[in-house]
Length: 418
Length: 144
Image 1 (cartoon, rainbow over the protein chains, first blue to last red):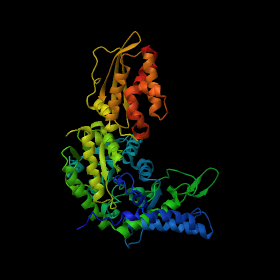
Image 2: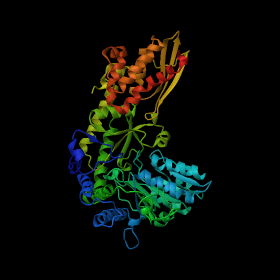
Image 3: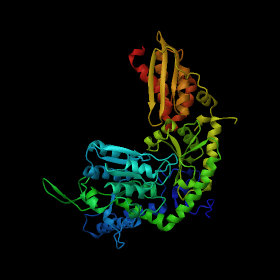
Image 4: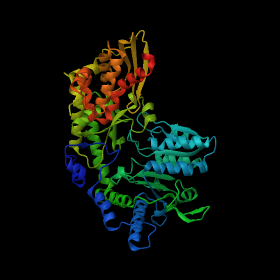
């Protein structure tokens, strides 16, 4: 049994250690970074800084190798391996963030498969970053954007999947873990429905990779996107994994330096995948630090410990929130359905007021539309807004107790004398 | 920083707004929205001979947008259009963090309580909503 009173992790995070007065419950927006990630970023510039790929001197070669190593590490981490278990590093494309990774698929891959009248199926739970690119791709191709809707508890049923994914479907794009409801979507079922109909599956794993191990083969995805900054890495690094033969067919979205094989006055030959998609100088230090972040997450903390600790934190938080009669939980009431996230409203009080008042006692939560306006509209959230507390393994019982005390203060501010 | 939410005046304006109703015969009406918060407001005025005889608002939003609208309606009722424009200019300058004179703060009366909003940049738009709506309405010469 995990003791959430004890916190063996906070000391690893300089911001949390340096600001004991805050309860940081907004890791779903961006996580804090451990010292080892900050050190790695600095170490890159101090010991191996040179422009990767192009230099022929050993320092540049070292920078190139550092990036290649992180590519292999991430490929192995997400199960992008061949039949003999070798990491398929070249199927990992680095971008700036998950949004850019998803845009790359929507802009470079979708036009290859979408014709007028075709359908792209997404869920109503999508973050705008896995929604607007598909609106754009559909508009460009004359295709139709179709939504899958969950039950009130956030479950995508087999019936809904069968009804919405059919012969006209060419692409299915789905969030692995919803950033508002916290539910895990049935990606394997979506993959089967997509593939049975000759469609491709794109998975937004931005909210899942900080909390659970991902295996692209088990999930059956054709593309997976996530960012480093929600997984304790630096801001500005995104990852796209794609099936190699699909990446091969796709044209680059950006062109310029470092993405070519050769250039003549009137034309150019692209470099192989993944460099083809990585125009310009990459944030090599950020990529190096991303390697350190995943090393810390997977090898120092470990996904088993993450699951166990976050499960205990969520269970406690849910229990405490339910004890307040004016708190309305959004989505499932079962803590087991919430992965890193609990969204809620305080009856009759605007989420922005809730957040501003919580801020006065150092409690950091997110309030607003969470980049999921269509979902909040579908949920009939007043003002298209709600509050969201999101958790990481570095949170503890005291953080949740401060949230609850803060929410009581919010209520009494608006209801003096009660 | 002062805590606006502990101000009795401010919270009264939010929970019991005197000026939140639909007017019978407004001479002027203008909508304001704050897309980032989902705040929506319709401001109505009855202007006679260049004087704001009646002001009211409807809509929904956070406590700051609602209380600010009620405080504004209270302040501009009975004032000339010119004076309302001046007060609105003072308020918007204050909200953006400009220092006003003591007389200006006195002229803004209860609205001066919202000066601390300039330290809550995320909420400035909420506090401004009613005043920007007023500005938009009086800015066009139809109100003269």
